[in-house]
Amino acid sequence: MAEQPLDEKTATMLVAEATAAPSMHNAQPWRFRYLSGEQVLHLRADPDRAMPRSDPDNRALHIGCGAALLNLRVAAAHADLAPETTLLPEPDDPLLLASVCLPGAVGGVRDEELARLHPAIRQRHTSRHPFAEKDIPEDLRVTLQEAAAREGATLVFPGPWHAETVLDLVRDAESRDTMSPGADEDLVRWTRLGAEADTAVDGVPEYAFGPRRRDGKAPVRDFSGRRPVADRGTTAFEHTPHLALLSTRADGPADWLRAGQALERVLLEATLADIAASLTSHALEDRELRLLARDPASDIGQVQMVMRLGYGPRGPATPRRPVRDVLDIT
Image (cartoon, rainbow, N blue to C red; front, side, top):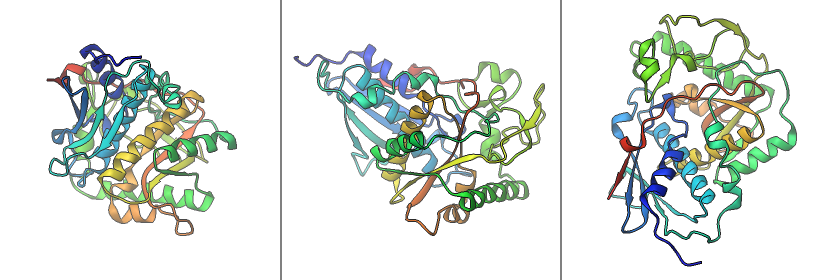
């Protein structure tokens, strides 16, 4: 079938799906530009949404943008497009994270495995609720590991001693934050309390905090800190949380973008399998702690994200900025 020009409506739809991706504190640190004459979408980092305190190297920013890129690729495949993606196409422009060529090849060969994930884009939500004390089947674990591998990353389900080490690192990070003045600066900036939660277009609103943890070992960040939140109860979380570590071989901007794509691919696969998930980078925000998250007995590279998986509520949808605020068309 002959190629057809990609119209602005389709480009807008692709970006709308891309922005459903997770990002640290739901800061949504991305911008898009569609070059209609060239049939190219650019993904750019938004430095105004960076977190200098907790993400000084912009590692988490790149991971969030990588997740948005994967969603865009899924949406494109669903629309019978065959996008050609280039990471960091211009070394002199570090804010240009990816270039996606969309030549309007409607009816062409598409990635069926990506297209299959499309229904999960809008179903996927971060869950900060307790999960059941129920094992994840081995075949599903393999499926999730294969999803990460397709994007050039590795997903490891740590054994008991390694999982306990990671949980200790998360608790250590929480203790360091308590002792360090201003450590919650980024968290406070990106949480939405009271009436602000009802009108927010970004950040983590109080209705997505989940209950406070009364008991259990699940690594769930308390976004309220010491601030009171009305009608928020406490409950027991799982004592044996199912953790997964996502890692890449190297540790530069391109690797972080690959990690973000792998992360979202795993999350979409998990969503289709009715597995809920929450993410924690708390122990990875401190370089010393992050190095300790690696299993010295295996060769898994650089840990980019700690995932908590299990059977439980998916959690509510969090707000997103209107597409008109993140997409420029030229």
